[in-house]
Length: 452
Image (cartoon, rainbow, N blue to C red; front, side, top):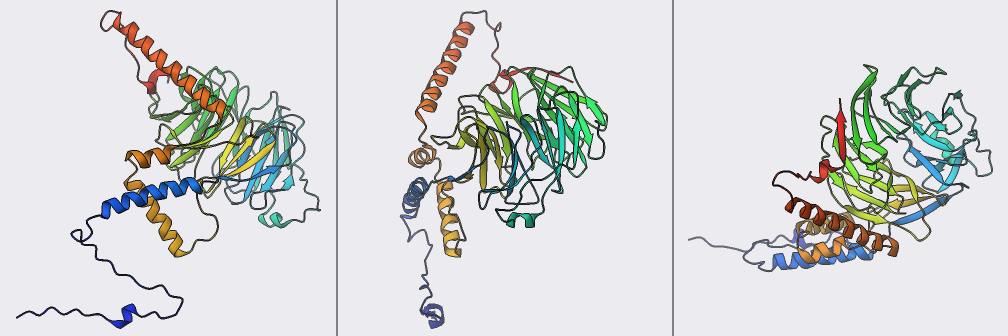
């Protein structure tokens, strides 16, 4: 005969200290917990609502420039430092933690249009409309504790003057070479006062230059003739060229999938491409209502941030068609440059109103040190939200955003125009001979041609 006995150990139930939490034992048998899904659904709803309550993304503004901020650069070797350049020739190094200027780099006589930091974090390269490229020694990390009253100015290591104005600069990964964009693409060395190579493919002014993080000899550029070109420095010549319907303002490579890049375009959209197959975009990212001015990927490669002429900053998933977050303030004007912080926790934006602004990458994220129980609670809330994210009520709460009135009206107008164009295309196709008119998919519609 089998006898079942309830056995409990007092050690499992007795508190070791008076501050300890009482242990609670749950029986997870689904036959007993018949309302489990209903309870979880309510928890998902509450988690989504709590996210909205605690969504305060704006951390602070950094003011000090006296003209519009045109470019930024981050130092991969220092978490809290970021460089900014303005249209009056001023370059500053900021300490994000204290939100104050640590160093200034005076010297440019015109607008600073490009900043880049070497991979080892020791050299800052700047270029501008005064036809000069300047190399600066980056102050060591202990300089972050400088006294406010001390002299913050730094003299350039080298100054190279060239024939034309520059629009952008980027440093090669793991080497002492950098590329500038202007009338053409020039490859420079730290130790030479003239370019090593000059690359050209019948382009107009080069707007953006970016080195590939996985293949350091591969270079992507965008130009004002609406082209995106790929160059291979080993061969010293271009490999592929893509002509789009509108101009591309900025390019950024995905750091985790370095064969993919995303282009910020004048037509309010961003286009992700596979560099091995340029005849169609892998994803079209829509939501802005004016030209997208700058783009930067998160170090994780899962998200990127964009800044637009419509005075907003948006965060997109790398494979998402619509933004997951939009940031705006009453005072923020046209956004010219954006950067993700090196730990993917913050976003920095530079705008026409001379301010840098610091935002949280996750609007409702709790700052500071979290207790283990708090961390588990946040993880559980994320898990239940993710499980029930497709249900209408949870989806509505998570997606809802308050927009400024001009953005809201422009979004409605843009939607009306797109719908009118779609109806016009359908009528044209209906009143034409079958097969005479073919409509291109959205991922190919803005591509004019690809040249090899």
